[in-house]
Amino acid sequence: LNNRADLHSWDIFLQRLRATYSSPAAKQIASQKLRTRKQGWNESVTAYYTDIIRLCKTVDDKMTDASKLDHLQQGLKPSLIKEVLRQKPATPSEFLEHARQEEVLNQLVITNEIDYNSQAANNTSSSSLVTPQQLDKQVRFQDYHDQPQYYYPSTASFSQPRYSSPRSPSANRFRPSYNTPYSSPRATLVRCYNCNKIGHYARDCWQSKNQLQRHS
Picture 1 (tube, rainbow, N blue to C red):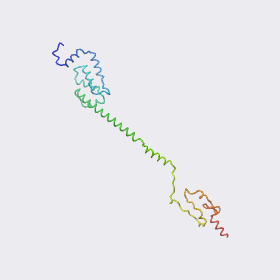
Picture 2: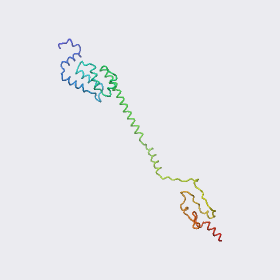
Picture 3: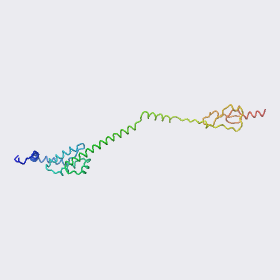
């Protein structure tokens, strides 16, 4: 108070007051915090910057911008520091500007990634769902293939029976069996006891009738 002539502004008065009444312990605590201060994962760049500048002023009111930049860069998030250093800020205010821009870009990228992953997951789940109509078609298709398949020969596949000798008029009484897998089993098992041939009965055998005609 004896040097009122030197107190030209309120800021100078506060600096003199802090220098006079600040304890060495407070400066030591601020210095330790400044060395270990790191930006939190959910802490904004503005909040981190404000706290670092406050600690710098507590430790040394006349700290240079280069020293402040060292403290600011030392505790900045790894996801931000690379691009901030690329811009080569010369003052703490330039550091704050570049760090804010990079923070906004990172938040935009994270938001886009979340939206993309959400849409991709929805598209995958919707494409894997089976509609009731598709399920009904699959069931009908499976039932069709599980049923036994029957194949019927066309009329062109039937072959006409061949005879090695003239037939007697009485041989017209029976219908000759066709050489197909679906012909009657009884027709294929009929055997004549006179000529020992398959396909007609003994009463219809033309050989026996010819023999009777010769004897008569």
